Amino acid sequence: MSYGFPPPRLLPSPAAAAYLGVSESMLRKLGIPRKEQGAKRLYDRSDLDAHADDLPYEVQPENRNNEEKAITACDDAFGMTK
Image (cartoon, rainbow, N blue to C red; front, top):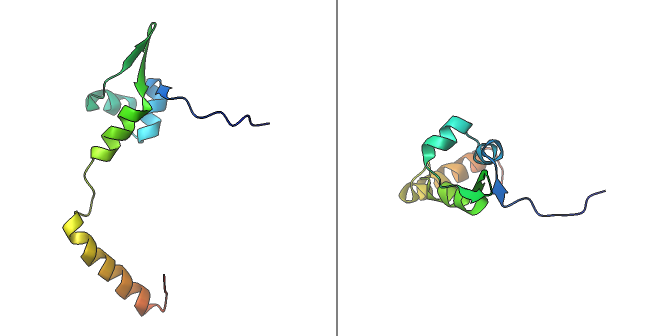
């Protein structure tokens, strides 16, 4: 039976690293601040999200139009439509 509780906002290092898809050692190198809860040092999911939001995209915005054109051309070549 599931109670539908939301995921925890504060995460220990292993869970925070998994959330971002990096190792714990890489997480520490990123310099994301932790919050203190008693003796625990926890990462706030909103800080992890902010870090991820600040990462650059692989395709820069000015190149996205070209990427869309290439995708459309490929779809057209194979008779696929969106």
